[in-house]
Length: 133
Image (cartoon, rainbow, N blue to C red):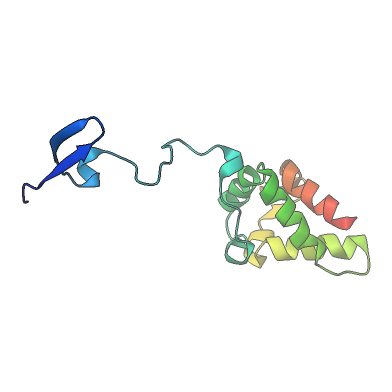
């Protein structure tokens, strides 16, 4: 690496300054802070890529992501676009959109027969209820 220097003349006087690449100066060129993102600043979920859910772990991860208000609102908007003639049919179609056929066979409302209990997913159930209105 070359040793470059530059002559600077200013109001306070003159001097010689040694140039260094930005990476070695430990300067953030975009003037942003390095801090952890709060849950409100996380990215919104791309529903086209993440639905239908395939594993039970994905259901619990979705519950965590739905704690962010924007994700919850976007899921409700997605579910409101599902058309059905009755509330019962709409709920069935919402679950069909959210869960793969294989996963839905491993789930039940109360968790009977060693299935995953959907009623424990309070935020997901709340999103489906809000989509009915």
